Length: 295
Image (cartoon, rainbow, N blue to C red; front, side, top):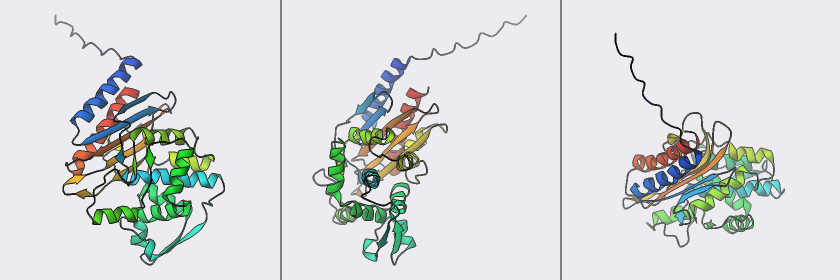
Protein backbone atom coordinates (compact mmCIF):
# COMPACT_ATOMS: atom_id res chain seq x y z
CA UNK A 1 0.00 0.00 0.00
CA UNK A 2 1.52 3.31 -1.08
CA UNK A 3 1.95 6.11 1.37
CA UNK A 4 -0.41 9.05 1.17
CA UNK A 5 1.54 12.12 0.04
CA UNK A 6 1.93 14.81 2.67
CA UNK A 7 0.57 18.12 1.40
CA UNK A 8 2.78 21.19 1.43
CA UNK A 9 1.90 23.39 4.37
CA UNK A 10 0.11 26.54 3.31
CA UNK A 11 1.71 29.87 4.10
CA UNK A 12 0.22 31.67 7.07
CA UNK A 13 -1.27 34.96 5.85
CA UNK A 14 0.53 37.95 7.25
CA UNK A 15 -1.43 40.43 9.32
CA UNK A 16 -2.00 43.87 7.85
CA UNK A 17 0.49 45.35 10.31
CA UNK A 18 3.12 42.84 9.24
CA UNK A 19 2.46 43.52 5.56
CA UNK A 20 2.80 47.26 6.11
CA UNK A 21 6.09 46.73 7.95
CA UNK A 22 7.30 44.60 5.05
CA UNK A 23 6.29 47.34 2.63
CA UNK A 24 8.53 49.93 4.26
CA UNK A 25 11.38 47.41 4.33
CA UNK A 26 10.85 46.54 0.67
CA UNK A 27 10.80 50.20 -0.36
CA UNK A 28 14.01 50.83 1.59
CA UNK A 29 15.67 47.92 -0.23
CA UNK A 30 14.51 49.07 -3.65
CA UNK A 31 15.86 52.56 -3.01
CA UNK A 32 19.14 51.29 -1.64
CA UNK A 33 19.79 49.15 -4.74
CA UNK A 34 18.44 51.59 -7.34
CA UNK A 35 20.74 52.91 -10.07
CA UNK A 36 20.42 56.51 -8.94
CA UNK A 37 18.69 58.54 -6.27
CA UNK A 38 15.19 57.14 -5.71
CA UNK A 39 12.43 58.97 -3.86
CA UNK A 40 9.18 57.21 -2.95
CA UNK A 41 5.92 58.16 -1.31
CA UNK A 42 2.96 55.84 -0.74
CA UNK A 43 -0.22 57.09 0.94
CA UNK A 44 -3.40 55.18 1.75
CA UNK A 45 -6.10 57.65 0.70
CA UNK A 46 -8.61 56.32 3.25
CA UNK A 47 -6.47 56.02 6.36
CA UNK A 48 -3.72 58.53 5.58
CA UNK A 49 -1.05 55.95 6.41
CA UNK A 50 2.16 57.01 4.68
CA UNK A 51 5.37 55.26 3.68
CA UNK A 52 8.31 57.05 2.14
CA UNK A 53 11.96 56.96 1.23
CA UNK A 54 13.54 60.39 0.72
CA UNK A 55 9.97 61.63 0.78
CA UNK A 56 10.96 65.21 1.65
CA UNK A 57 13.90 65.47 -0.75
CA UNK A 58 13.60 67.70 -3.83
CA UNK A 59 13.43 66.02 -7.25
CA UNK A 60 13.00 67.42 -10.76
CA UNK A 61 9.37 66.86 -11.73
CA UNK A 62 9.74 66.79 -15.51
CA UNK A 63 6.26 66.22 -16.99
CA UNK A 64 4.73 65.29 -13.63
CA UNK A 65 4.48 69.07 -13.31
CA UNK A 66 1.64 68.88 -15.87
CA UNK A 67 -0.53 67.17 -13.28
CA UNK A 68 -0.20 70.20 -11.01
CA UNK A 69 -0.95 72.60 -13.87
CA UNK A 70 -4.03 70.60 -14.89
CA UNK A 71 -5.30 70.50 -11.31
CA UNK A 72 -5.04 74.28 -11.07
CA UNK A 73 -6.84 74.68 -14.42
CA UNK A 74 -9.68 72.44 -13.27
CA UNK A 75 -9.98 74.28 -9.97
CA UNK A 76 -10.16 77.61 -11.82
CA UNK A 77 -12.88 76.09 -14.01
CA UNK A 78 -14.83 75.06 -10.91
CA UNK A 79 -14.55 78.67 -9.73
CA UNK A 80 -15.76 79.91 -13.16
CA UNK A 81 -12.47 81.63 -13.89
CA UNK A 82 -11.88 79.41 -16.94
CA UNK A 83 -14.37 77.88 -19.36
CA UNK A 84 -13.22 74.39 -20.35
CA UNK A 85 -15.07 74.74 -23.66
CA UNK A 86 -13.25 77.98 -24.49
CA UNK A 87 -11.27 77.58 -27.70
CA UNK A 88 -7.70 78.86 -27.74
CA UNK A 89 -5.85 79.78 -30.91
CA UNK A 90 -2.48 78.04 -31.14
CA UNK A 91 0.07 79.72 -33.40
CA UNK A 92 3.26 78.35 -34.90
CA UNK A 93 5.13 80.09 -32.13
CA UNK A 94 3.24 78.00 -29.56
CA UNK A 95 4.29 74.65 -31.06
CA UNK A 96 6.78 72.61 -29.06
CA UNK A 97 8.83 69.50 -29.62
CA UNK A 98 7.36 66.35 -28.13
CA UNK A 99 3.88 67.34 -29.22
CA UNK A 100 1.25 65.52 -31.27
CA UNK A 101 -0.48 68.88 -31.68
CA UNK A 102 2.64 70.26 -33.36
CA UNK A 103 2.88 67.19 -35.60
CA UNK A 104 -0.82 67.23 -36.53
CA UNK A 105 -1.20 71.02 -36.88
CA UNK A 106 2.13 72.45 -38.11
CA UNK A 107 0.44 75.73 -39.03
CA UNK A 108 -1.40 76.08 -35.73
CA UNK A 109 -4.86 75.13 -34.51
CA UNK A 110 -7.83 76.13 -32.38
CA UNK A 111 -8.55 73.73 -29.51
CA UNK A 112 -10.78 73.75 -26.44
CA UNK A 113 -9.17 74.01 -23.02
CA UNK A 114 -10.40 70.53 -22.08
CA UNK A 115 -8.79 69.10 -25.24
CA UNK A 116 -5.50 70.71 -24.29
CA UNK A 117 -5.68 69.38 -20.73
CA UNK A 118 -6.39 65.89 -22.00
CA UNK A 119 -3.45 66.07 -24.43
CA UNK A 120 -1.02 67.28 -21.77
CA UNK A 121 -2.01 64.47 -19.41
CA UNK A 122 -2.59 61.50 -21.74
CA UNK A 123 0.18 62.02 -24.30
CA UNK A 124 2.24 64.50 -22.22
CA UNK A 125 1.89 67.06 -25.01
CA UNK A 126 4.31 69.95 -24.46
CA UNK A 127 2.44 72.40 -26.70
CA UNK A 128 -0.77 71.81 -24.75
CA UNK A 129 1.02 72.18 -21.42
CA UNK A 130 2.51 75.58 -22.26
CA UNK A 131 -0.79 76.90 -23.66
CA UNK A 132 -2.71 75.81 -20.55
CA UNK A 133 0.01 77.19 -18.28
CA UNK A 134 -0.29 80.54 -20.05
CA UNK A 135 -4.10 80.44 -19.84
CA UNK A 136 -4.13 79.94 -16.06
CA UNK A 137 -1.77 82.88 -15.63
CA UNK A 138 1.70 81.33 -15.62
CA UNK A 139 3.92 79.54 -13.11
CA UNK A 140 3.43 82.09 -10.35
CA UNK A 141 -0.35 81.60 -10.38
CA UNK A 142 0.09 77.81 -10.26
CA UNK A 143 2.40 78.17 -7.27
CA UNK A 144 0.00 80.54 -5.51
CA UNK A 145 -2.98 78.19 -5.98
CA UNK A 146 -0.99 75.18 -4.77
CA UNK A 147 0.15 77.18 -1.74
CA UNK A 148 -3.44 78.09 -0.88
CA UNK A 149 -4.35 74.42 -1.19
CA UNK A 150 -1.60 73.69 1.37
CA UNK A 151 0.49 71.69 -1.11
CA UNK A 152 4.00 72.55 0.07
CA UNK A 153 7.43 71.77 -1.39
CA UNK A 154 6.14 71.83 -4.97
CA UNK A 155 7.32 74.61 -7.27
CA UNK A 156 6.51 75.31 -10.93
CA UNK A 157 8.83 77.94 -12.35
CA UNK A 158 9.34 77.14 -16.02
CA UNK A 159 7.39 76.31 -19.16
CA UNK A 160 8.29 73.41 -21.43
CA UNK A 161 9.88 75.89 -23.85
CA UNK A 162 12.15 77.20 -21.09
CA UNK A 163 13.07 73.70 -19.99
CA UNK A 164 13.91 72.78 -23.59
CA UNK A 165 16.18 75.82 -23.77
CA UNK A 166 17.99 74.56 -20.68
CA UNK A 167 18.54 71.20 -22.38
CA UNK A 168 19.89 72.84 -25.53
CA UNK A 169 22.29 74.81 -23.37
CA UNK A 170 23.25 71.55 -21.59
CA UNK A 171 22.27 72.99 -18.25
CA UNK A 172 21.54 70.18 -15.84
CA UNK A 173 18.37 70.09 -13.81
CA UNK A 174 19.95 71.57 -10.69
CA UNK A 175 17.38 72.36 -8.06
CA UNK A 176 17.81 76.10 -8.17
CA UNK A 177 15.20 77.32 -10.61
CA UNK A 178 13.43 74.34 -12.12
CA UNK A 179 10.10 72.63 -11.65
CA UNK A 180 10.80 70.62 -8.54
CA UNK A 181 8.89 68.84 -5.83
CA UNK A 182 9.13 66.18 -3.17
CA UNK A 183 7.53 62.75 -3.43
CA UNK A 184 5.43 63.59 -0.38
CA UNK A 185 4.18 66.81 -2.00
CA UNK A 186 3.03 65.01 -5.16
CA UNK A 187 1.42 62.30 -3.03
CA UNK A 188 -0.49 65.01 -1.17
CA UNK A 189 -1.62 66.45 -4.50
CA UNK A 190 -2.88 63.01 -5.55
CA UNK A 191 -4.71 62.49 -2.26
CA UNK A 192 -6.34 65.90 -2.65
CA UNK A 193 -7.56 64.88 -6.10
CA UNK A 194 -8.84 61.52 -4.84
CA UNK A 195 -10.77 63.11 -1.97
CA UNK A 196 -12.14 65.96 -4.12
CA UNK A 197 -10.50 68.51 -1.87
CA UNK A 198 -9.01 70.39 -4.83
CA UNK A 199 -11.59 70.03 -7.59
CA UNK A 200 -15.18 70.77 -6.75
CA UNK A 201 -17.11 69.36 -9.70
CA UNK A 202 -17.57 65.61 -10.07
CA UNK A 203 -16.97 65.64 -13.82
CA UNK A 204 -13.55 67.29 -13.62
CA UNK A 205 -12.53 65.18 -10.65
CA UNK A 206 -13.45 61.96 -12.47
CA UNK A 207 -11.39 63.13 -15.44
CA UNK A 208 -8.30 63.19 -13.23
CA UNK A 209 -9.19 59.86 -11.65
CA UNK A 210 -9.62 58.17 -15.03
CA UNK A 211 -6.12 58.64 -16.38
CA UNK A 212 -5.65 54.94 -17.07
CA UNK A 213 -5.22 55.55 -20.81
CA UNK A 214 -1.92 57.41 -20.41
CA UNK A 215 0.34 56.23 -23.23
CA UNK A 216 3.69 57.14 -21.69
CA UNK A 217 5.77 55.06 -19.28
CA UNK A 218 3.96 51.73 -19.57
CA UNK A 219 7.06 50.02 -18.18
CA UNK A 220 6.93 51.99 -14.93
CA UNK A 221 4.27 51.76 -12.20
CA UNK A 222 1.80 50.18 -14.61
CA UNK A 223 4.14 47.25 -15.27
CA UNK A 224 4.30 46.33 -11.58
CA UNK A 225 0.55 46.10 -10.98
CA UNK A 226 -1.79 43.12 -11.50
CA UNK A 227 -4.39 43.41 -14.25
CA UNK A 228 -7.15 43.77 -11.62
CA UNK A 229 -5.67 47.09 -10.43
CA UNK A 230 -6.33 50.44 -12.10
CA UNK A 231 -3.77 53.22 -12.35
CA UNK A 232 -4.49 56.89 -13.06
CA UNK A 233 -1.05 58.42 -13.40
CA UNK A 234 1.32 60.95 -14.93
CA UNK A 235 4.87 60.22 -15.95
CA UNK A 236 7.85 62.49 -16.42
CA UNK A 237 11.21 62.04 -18.11
CA UNK A 238 14.09 64.46 -18.50
CA UNK A 239 16.62 64.52 -21.28
CA UNK A 240 19.78 62.46 -20.85
CA UNK A 241 22.79 64.76 -20.62
CA UNK A 242 26.31 63.32 -20.73
CA UNK A 243 24.95 59.87 -19.92
CA UNK A 244 22.90 60.94 -16.90
CA UNK A 245 19.10 61.12 -16.75
CA UNK A 246 17.89 63.43 -14.01
CA UNK A 247 14.23 62.40 -14.00
CA UNK A 248 12.51 59.08 -14.59
CA UNK A 249 9.23 59.64 -12.78
CA UNK A 250 5.78 58.21 -12.31
CA UNK A 251 3.04 59.31 -9.94
CA UNK A 252 -0.51 58.08 -9.72
CA UNK A 253 -3.53 56.78 -7.87
CA UNK A 254 -3.80 53.01 -7.70
CA UNK A 255 -7.35 51.70 -7.33
CA UNK A 256 -7.48 48.28 -5.70
CA UNK A 257 -10.03 45.64 -6.68
CA UNK A 258 -12.08 46.50 -3.57
CA UNK A 259 -12.22 50.19 -4.53
CA UNK A 260 -9.65 51.52 -2.10
CA UNK A 261 -7.12 53.99 -3.49
CA UNK A 262 -3.42 54.38 -2.78
CA UNK A 263 -1.26 57.26 -4.01
CA UNK A 264 2.10 56.05 -5.30
CA UNK A 265 4.98 58.31 -6.30
CA UNK A 266 8.37 57.11 -7.53
CA UNK A 267 11.06 59.54 -8.72
CA UNK A 268 14.44 58.25 -9.95
CA UNK A 269 17.08 60.97 -10.36
CA UNK A 270 20.72 61.12 -11.39
CA UNK A 271 20.75 57.72 -13.06
CA UNK A 272 23.31 56.48 -15.56
CA UNK A 273 21.29 53.39 -16.52
CA UNK A 274 19.31 52.90 -19.71
CA UNK A 275 15.56 53.49 -19.83
CA UNK A 276 14.41 49.85 -19.38
CA UNK A 277 16.54 49.52 -16.24
CA UNK A 278 15.26 52.81 -14.84
CA UNK A 279 11.64 51.95 -15.54
CA UNK A 280 12.06 48.51 -13.94
CA UNK A 281 12.93 50.23 -10.64
CA UNK A 282 9.60 52.08 -10.66
CA UNK A 283 7.77 48.86 -11.54
CA UNK A 284 9.34 47.22 -8.48
CA UNK A 285 7.87 49.99 -6.30
CA UNK A 286 4.40 49.34 -7.68
CA UNK A 287 4.81 45.60 -7.21
CA UNK A 288 5.77 46.07 -3.55
CA UNK A 289 2.65 48.20 -3.02
CA UNK A 290 0.44 45.61 -4.73
CA UNK A 291 1.78 42.80 -2.56
CA UNK A 292 1.25 44.83 0.62
CA UNK A 293 -2.28 45.95 -0.11
CA UNK A 294 -3.65 42.91 -1.91
CA UNK A 295 -1.55 39.89 -0.99
